[in-house]
Image 1 (cartoon, helix red, strand yellow):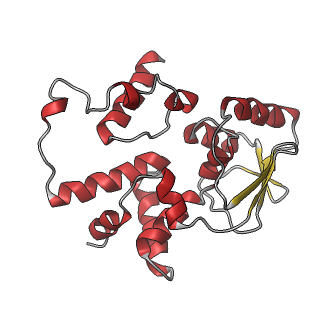
Image 2: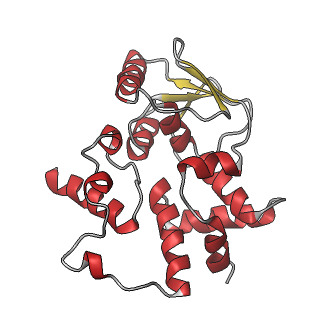
Length: 210
């Protein structure tokens, strides 16, 4: 287990940003980025400059790792963003933010996105009154998200809320802590997303459009 946690810290340090892979620890002084904000390894300080292609590829990899998606999913999302009206980069970030596993994490019902995916696949989340088990599904305006009807589902949600105290809930989500009921009030805006996701989406569009 310790080896697994260490590998997650190295991934954050290599990417140069918090990926929030270890839940509450990432918000504490024990976070690897806070303690050692440089690439891991013997030659971490002396890493050379990236080429233009390398910069764009690195930004794409950072986005995928931040949200925990694979290349095949990324391609599908990029195609959706390309076909949508408006700026492709902003649309892409909006799609990633509207994944239900990310929404569960943003609400504080999970301490990390990986845990959010596990909670969803185990049937602890209800979407519009029905049990939902697909972490990659995208939520829409007026969707209702809440723990499942089982006692364990509510217990898991309350436990994670205690661990996630202080997490800021985005303005496009409405959440009643008492009833553990959330509503998607709008679509996440690019400025909102960039406050919490330090990604240069234009670089991603440039490499993915080739």
